[in-house]
Structure formats: C-alpha cells, structure tokens
Image (tube, rainbow, N blue to C red; front, top):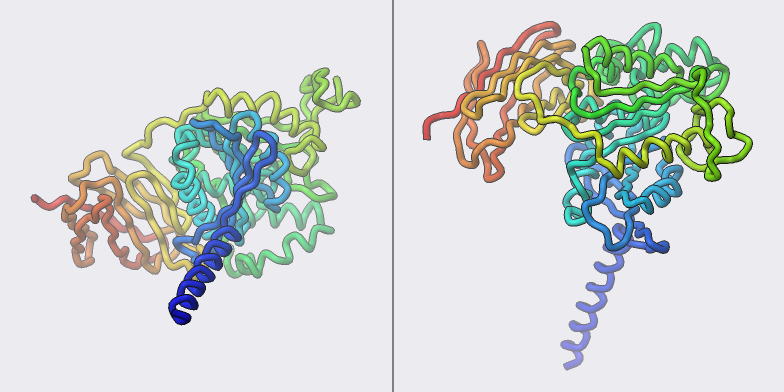
Length: 430
C-alpha cells in the first residue's frame, strides 16, 4: 500500500515538474484588453531555441499580423502592446544571429510556429514585417530569403549590405564617415568573418540588394533620414537609397521611399504628438518606433495603422517562371534551395532561372556566384506518393518519391564558381 502511495505521489510530482517546465517556456499575461504570450520553438536548421513574444487583443479573430524587430527585442514590446490594441497580432522574435545568416531561418521557424499555434486568430493573407536598424536588416534579409511570405515590408534605416560593396556598404561607410563607431563593427569578424577573407562569399550573401529581384510581391515602405549615421550612431542613408534605386531599376512599382528631411514634410497639429513638433520638419532620427520618437510615431499613426487594418497591400500570386538570387538558402511555395552547409555560416550563392509552371516537369538553370560544395533542392506542393527523376548534365540521375505532404528532396552536385548546372525534374508515369 505504501509503495503504491509513493508511486502515485511520484507521478503527481513528475506531472507538476512537466507543467512548470511548459509554463516557463510558454506563458501568457493579460494587460487590459491585450494578451501577451511568451513562447519558444526549435530552429529546424540551427537547433537553436527561439524565443518570441506576441501581443494580441482578447476575443478577436482574423487579425492582421505585424512581425516587428529592433536590435533588441525588448525595445519593441511597449510599441507592440499599443499596436495590438488597434486590432493587430504583433510578434517580436529574439534572434541569435542578427547579421542575416541562418538566424533568418530561425525567424521563419518562429513565424511557422506562430501560424500553427494561432491559426484561429490570425489572417495569414495580411502579413507585414517591420524593423528598424538591425531590425531593418532583418526585413531586407527575410524579403530576400522568403519573398512570397509578406504583403508589406517596412525597413526603417535598415542595413541592406553589410560589407560587400567597396564604396557603399555598411562596413565601408562606417569606417569612412563614423570612425568612432569601432565597437559596432568589431564584432562582425566573429559573426561573419573578416571582410578581406570572406568578401566574395559571406559578405556577398549578406548583400540583400542582389536579391531584390526575388520580391515583386511585398509592398516596400522604406524610411531613412539624410543625416543618419553621420558622425554618430545610425545607418548611412545610402543603404536605403541603393535598395530603392534597384527596385526602380528593375521596373518594380511596389515601393515607396521616404527620406527626411524633406521640404513640406511637416508634423501636423495632432494632440497625440508633442506640441513642440507641430509644423516642424519630420526627421526619422535613429531609434525604434515609440511615442518618444515623434517622427516614427507619426508614421505609425498616419501610415502603418491604416495599412495594417485595411490590408490594402496584397501580395500577388507567386510567379511560376522567373529569375532569383539564392543567398545560401531561399524558399518559395514550390521549391527551396539550401547551398552548402549550415556550419559554413552561409557563404555560397547562385543565380537561378526557374520554371515550375507544370507539376509534371520542373526546370532550373543554376549559375554559381561562388564555388558550390553541394546542397539540397526541395520540391513542394506536388502530389503525394509520386516518383520524380532529377537529371543534371554529367551527373547520375536521382529518383525520389514525394512524401505524404508532396515534398521531394534531391542532393545537389558541386559546381565551380561561375559554372552552370541545368536541372530537370520529371514526373514518372504512375
């Protein structure tokens, strides 16, 4: 009898421990009409534990989603609570790699977890990603790696090129215009590698300007101040100018670039804004969106709030033929490339021409920008339990049968720098 009692107590104790562990990893708070949840998931590529915090109004459904980043997640929380009260589902993710490597896959894993856990509350067809400074770099990186995912992308004084361009990249402009910024770039060799050794690999991969062609889908709302990063903390305005110029060069119309100061761009008389700002020139001073940054708070009230609630920006259907840039990894609804290995810190890149217009035959032409050591090609949205044969010139053919979700994964052969690889994936007769 005593043994049985001890066994029951042990089971109860074990269940309490499990419950406490779960509550530590995932817990919820309520502040008035807004609920705050803290959750975590595991990175599919990195194995990292990814923490994220969501704010959403109680008793609401079909909520637009705002993914909001700054260099430090804590800086976004007060803003997210306020924006959630408009009727928005707000998410901030804590990233281990803020230099736009595989940390971006961690970000995507967090998004997938949000979409799964809050499926009944959110509108997956109204998704905005926004970030300031390092968060702006995250916006650019996510738009390149997952171009089909967002209806609106808002980089605020974001870093579009960490160090590839010898004249206009973030690293170069800091050394030229803000020499006292040493601590801000001193950590980059540890995160990415030194620029001399990895200029044509890791820094190439982190130049989001090459990947603009990937995204005719999201509407880009790009904000910057002319004097940002001149003699003080900030990000040089050229990084936003270059991105906007490339959007225009490609003939895209899915963007608006606002640079301050701008003649005639003035604060209105609005009781929600400090009276000393009324009729003064708006300046996007470096920081994060909150009430203490009147210009960015003005943007929140007059632009962001309306675009979120109205859902006026709608991404078009994914183009089944086209050209894209693969910065080590890149995902679409129909295929995904992973070049090299996670351990090499994202330093392989390629351009592709693709045709996935027919499920009976997919075709890819790959031009290697770096040496490609191999990798994987994942085909998606195919019928389950169907066999496909992948052929590549001078390489043995591969056969794979799609799984229950219609996914088939093929191994990519090595390719020399500037070399080409033509892949044809043909459905076998059933």
